[in-house]
Image (cartoon, rainbow, N blue to C red):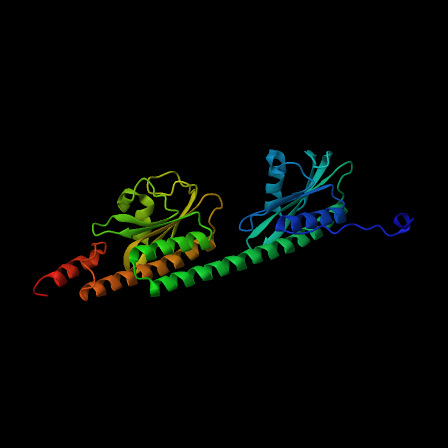
Length: 334
């Protein structure tokens, strides 16, 4: 009798991950707006695409994709009949698309599905309210990711600065630098190329330590490398084709020049296998490259000082402007 007469109780769903949290949000919004299915498609840089009670990817249908693209452009709601299978075994008869405005320069589309009944003008107005609630949650998620990225970038610069101050062995220091970049800022690969006396570049550090087919290259034979050194700016390479000097698994690359006091010391190459690089990644690659350039220059200066003091034998001539000075110092009359 207690169970029959008492208020219905629903067991609280345990939320242990971001996926669980989004499942609860979408289910609640679908119930509130009387949708049988719900999907959100969000543009970069947020990069979120989620569904509730929808089977597969609704954008696989070119007609639905065209409607979503038109909703992005017009920023107006649109509806159309569509046979879309739902996760509960039914098939939706109609869908409604409404624009999402997540952050400045980033938006998306809400797609609502219904079975057995259509959408009215009032539903189109209500869809804007649902879209606003979703936009707030997406903006919060974006801000959390941005804050996390800022913390990781700050930690990376701290570690690179620490290496520049306390690093003694140049090889160990360079390997430590690329390891920090690969592990802290979510790069799948990080390669460090240092200039040789003849103008070519030698691969001196790589993370992971799987070297490409070439470990010494001439920049003039590779357009991207030459462009970065000549223009002294970070270049982003999207959908990179396999080239001998590139990391084998990277499909999106950032190539940044190592410049210290106007002198190019080499290149920093960062790569990702899946997630493309955004404008903030390009900016940070330039900052990280400037830190590494100071690290390389500081380590080289330390090597020269120790050579003058007789602690080391003459260093290998990787530093084009220093070869003559080292020869002069090692001559009997110096």
